[in-house]
Image (cartoon, rainbow, N blue to C red; front, side, top):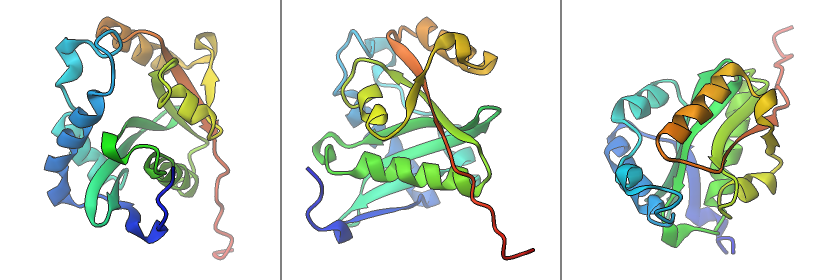
Amino acid sequence: MLLTDASRLIIRPAVHAELAQLPVVEQAAALRFTPADLPASIRSQATPLAMLQTAHRQDLLWVACVDSLLAGFLFAEVTDDGLHIGEMSVLPDQGKQGLGTALLNAAISAAASQQHAAITLTTFQHVPWNAPFYLKRGVHITPTDLCSRAMRARLARETQLGLYHRVAMCKLVSITVDTSQT
């Protein structure tokens, strides 16, 4: 179900004062996962504040607000593979309303405008709001043997943390060229 009134949803760059709220959103979203998928040892962890601060400084952190309340976020980082989505979380009671799609579209637009050839991410292959969500939006699973060394290392680190059934995903981005300056 999508929000019936699109004006209720706003996707925008995060402001510094919101950084402290993001772990609350991430931890609430983590409760949807089974203990087999997200072990107790990491269930209560959230993206380190330093990573969020870096993404904020680089304009790679977006929030989804519904009726002016923070309901989700996405942070990305620049890698050799393109713009990598480090985390996307939406409050469970706001799920299936288009927030994730809107956040993903913000990241895709940023990748295009910043001349990144692709967006990448790692996610659970079998969880409905993970790989199946991205597949429906044109993000494709990258076979491990075709992943960059850095992406394979990222997947290996996730396995060491107890995260299984993870896949790398990629979407090629149409790069926007500004011809007004020529």
